[in-house]
Image (cartoon, rainbow, N blue to C red; front, side, top):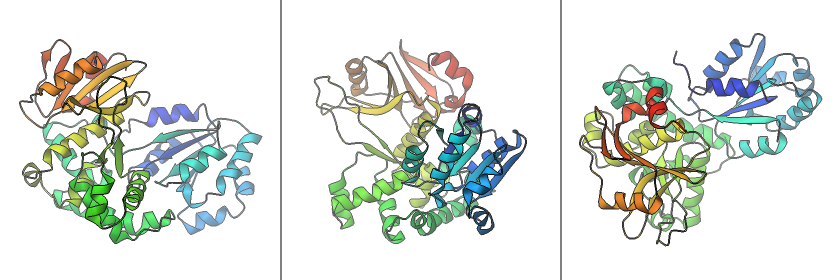
Length: 391
């Protein structure tokens, strides 16, 4: 079993908060991780709200949970019983002891709002994404497979690329026909799949609702609604443009990425690395995959955006906090080169350092504060400590 990077953070939150919420898409490994954490805390109780027998035990949730006040109670698929949040609030207010409840929630547009409003000041939130490069610790071959298959555990661990592709196809179908309707979202699965596939073809491009609406035959607000659904269910990520008063004409629309590269490839019918290398999406796919690694591995206190001006200055990812800025340029090349627009962006933003992430075997400096970095090193703690000491 692979150790999940987020486990120490969750255990730390359980030592400080009465309730901890672990959110994320289905099949990302939330239940396995929760059971691992619970097993290390002695007496605990696991309740799966998708099982009728477990749901029946919560007919009177206040009475039932009060009887187990001395145990860590794990409530899986908690969005199935939204009225439970008010009960948890009263139980916690009666006993503020930390580590009472671990709540697992699959993607739901309303779950975060409900929990935040009902349990404000009583709960800590964490998101579990599929496997990232720091958890897999791949060699060069496994890195390519992780990019091809994506990070969902059952996709990554499948016995073959064909079995992995079949699992992802099934995941997409289940998400559209079962999960999204279960969240109370009333959009036909066939409509949302067509939109999802359309997004796959414009993966990594700036969001243009009017253009997509025209191609899809619906209104711009409708495609915006579809995008909101996929974002709320952890399938899509919007990377905002950097907003700064630099006296430049900046691009103001976000860039849109499918969060898991494996699902992107499944939606495009890409089953093997040979097919991926020969597909027009290969560069954008690599960019999205590296972006997702950066999102997972950089501290959440850093805000990520992209920078692009009308004059052509551009950098793929800018990480900033408290006036400091770092840049990440992403290139799918064994000999990556950056354009004049990259150097202009460096000057515009006053970046203290920049990293060019590429599928190379060894890194090397390009300038005093610019370095080419093998993508495999993103998950290496020693490299991060040496090169990003203040992060």
